[in-house]
Length: 254
Image 1 (spheres, rainbow, N blue to C red):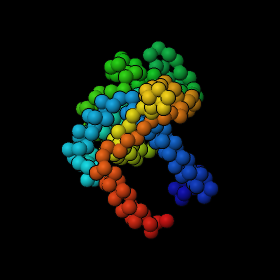
Image 2: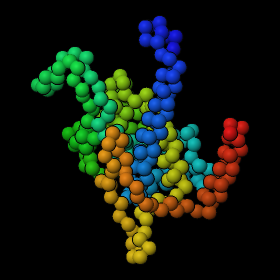
Image 3: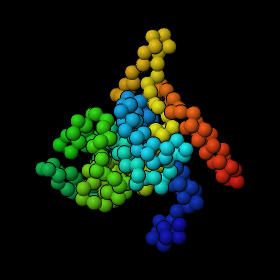
Image 4: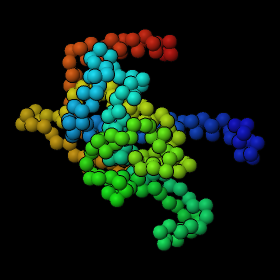
């Protein structure tokens, strides 16, 4: 706050509180939307779960859940997270920017003060941008992208995805968001078999519609049903044990 005041832009305590509230809200909404997309994609593509489970079983077995220290040993989880953000980006158009000067782009004149968007969805679904079969959910396309998004952000080859935007003002949550998604996805796949729900009358699976998304700034799937089936009794026992330990660890903060 002192730094802003010295620059002639004083920030009140209320404004600061508002800023941090917006950061929390923005991070929560985008992460939850991305997780709903991940779950939908996993239920539609059981082969992806099976491929990830092989790595998880080799590294963690059934006696413990994956932790962040396992990141380097579980590259396919990282691929799943990146593909989910490419396939159905939480913010389909990015946030608006305003041009500071007159500019030209591929023969098109863009006057100073123009509002421009990064068309994230369009870029992610264009084969000439390097995405083969872009409408297919396929984490294998990221097999060679072992690092986190923030590690690629400052490079000339930032084409792995633009879910966090691009340029100097890309999402400041880039460091936290992908780590959180990795933790969630790894634990879900480790613990459960995620399947399409079953119609009780016909006994057949209720097909999920990967196009059934709510329109708006946030790109989130409309409500859908899936089944979370624990993988084994050993996995259930581990979940209960780790939940009890977490409850004890967090008790002092309640």
